[in-house]
Image (cartoon, rainbow, N blue to C red; front, side):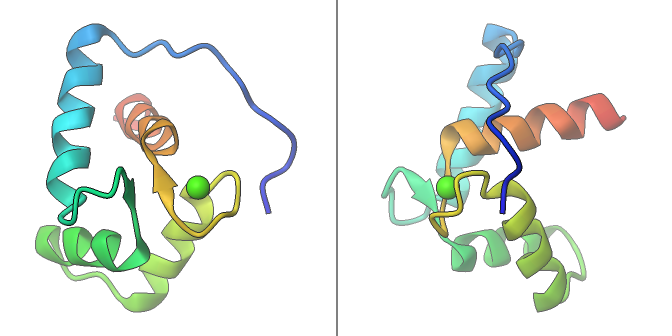
Length: 86
Ligand SMILES: [Ca+2]
């Protein structure tokens, strides 16, 4: 349900990129190269009290190309959004 292609420049620094990738790999427990909703759910529940509904919503928001999994480039957008929000 993504609206248009937002191919904005990747403005993460090398350090941020590395940090994001470390977290990504940690969440990607089966090392498939992408995050499934189950992996996302596990990761989010570890950080706090998150309902399945919240996970579903988040998944939908992150999954830009709508293939049901989160690739690293999608995760990076999340990382960037989280950084910009603080
Ligand atoms: Ca995706």
